[in-house]
Image (cartoon, rainbow, N blue to C red; front, side):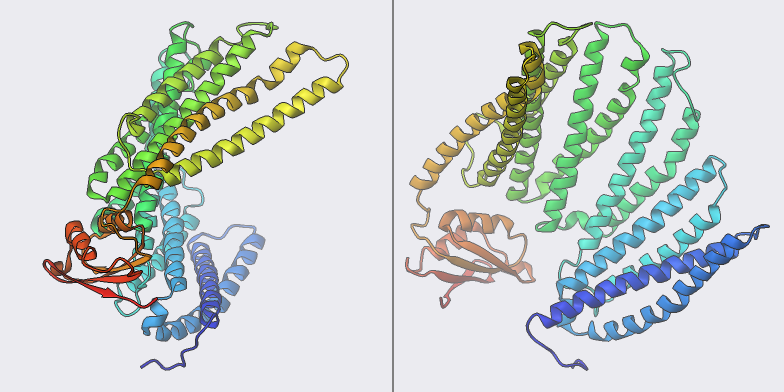
Length: 538
């Protein structure tokens, strides 16, 4: 029994939010003060102690005020968290994730920065970085101990901190790898252009990134593999997987590869010069790192649900569509530029080349992911089509406003040249044309899908309002099958034990045995091949 009175309504939620925000602030202040105090202790005193005195006073204020308050508040919350209602609250899960990730970021960046500076023989300020890394690592370890405490670990979103931290480690390693490869490739470019490398020697630049690369990979491995975050499917895990592993990595791969192709093709018509060769290392590094992450994430989709696979395919097709449409807009821009007499040099050649490269590369990726000739489920891409229409509307509106402003400016000016008007509107007009073509194609798809949805009847011949599924295992595909078959909103209550797993055929057969006018039903998996159907009250 808990030692406090349970209350209902919005009061417990507001109380939790205030207390956890206060706890986050107190822990952060106490940790900052402690790290600053430790840094002052291990830093030798200098001749001028005015700044040291101010820093010591601030550190003591943080430690001696925020420290005891943190201890008192945590003792009170620790007792409350023994109650299931408290450790199941979303506010507790959000606090744990925020404190876990914040402490990990501060500790890791301080440590990796310290190691990188030491490898470059830069020892100034090492005491501050070391103290920050040690104290915040202690805060992070405290959060790990709380998560491992079965009595107080968050019951809602229990793996949120691990999911965020695993992707943080991978992003850290990816950015550092891009920096190291850029330095390495730039040194190679320097062999073609004398005196091209200016600044820190390239091997020192690569060496300084090693702690970030190895440390980021270690953080990713510890969470993704050791803490089995890779085995977590569904919900926020799949959302983060799509956003980081597919969308972000795909954008890096697409952008780096497209820009690299453009630069390489330009080199076929121009002599190698510093302005042409300098961007190649960064484009090549981004393309390589993005391709590795995207390929790994795409290959691992086989272990996830059909919904996640379809979302990954649609997101990838969206990337290709954005690149191809942008390339088409640039091509229109370049063609209009050719109508205007250039003041000097080639006005539209390089611009047209960039547009063609992005159009072909983006269209190729779009065709690979979208597969225009493939028969697709109209239910699966409704959200995608709505997003495409929404973004297209925004782009078209902005382009029309810019074109209208330029046209009215031309009409109101008595000495305006028509060539100047073409030059002013060619960029937004190109975007408008590309957006219109994209919208027309997807509007045809949307009309066809709507006709299919209107004429298709459910396989079970029934239409329910809500289905409550009680089963074990990965139920994401079962939920999709039930939703498509009945048009109902499906809610899943998981239960432990492999004997409570179900098949889609068994669930559809169970639904077929109940009256058609049953609006709310429960499908209770009682054992292998045993499914009980319970009609629920409205």
